[in-house]
Image (tube, rainbow, N blue to C red; front, side, top):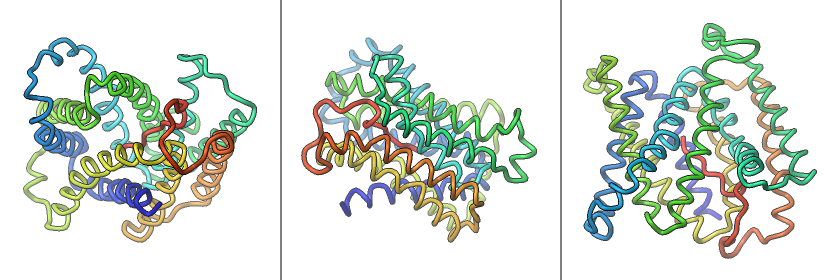
Length: 318
């Protein structure tokens, strides 16, 4: 259990580090640099076993890989960075935690996976919590109002969850077919997404001089985000999914928004409003109710399930 919590501590601390970095680095450059460096490192580690086999697979699958890059990493990462920049980190993290609900909706429409009344009730509670969360706004969000109670940062974060989950369904299909290893596919999509994001930064004439002006603290945060957030956390998560049940991992992932709330308050001075506290509690309750049926049917500990429902395979990646 301690190893699982360590995995999610890495995710939570990386979110807070990215929040701090977004105040000094343009988001396209930050996303591009993190992804590009992490992608190069993962591909380098994988080169001996798989990349020496040649480029035949990549030529055959280029259209699939491009779609995965766009929908799994590039668009979600940019949208999440935009939302994180203009919202407190706790709110952004709680909105991202609705990923299991989004996965269940996709499973219903794409694979005709029926929802029991218990899961539907948990889904309704989670959506109620999300709506309360969105009703709270900061002065910065007020200036970025889109329509009704929605701001552009909130819509961007919701879009990142919806787009990212659709992309990860395709990634799961590639990995399950044994055509690519998890580290290999992660390296490819991070390298591709990082390259496109950096090219976009050049096109829009973003200032790369901000990197030269980084303080030693911010340089350390950037290195931490790349190594711990992009490389270690996702590799560790894959290893944990092989060792523990996906249900346990999904439930343990609920700790991320809570840790982000505490770290955001202590490290960044972000004081969560009552909306965030109440809404966060509702989202967590909804997730517990949603997963309770799976917990009663399968043990939390032990080998990973061979046929895990899509909603239980939710993958968080800020």
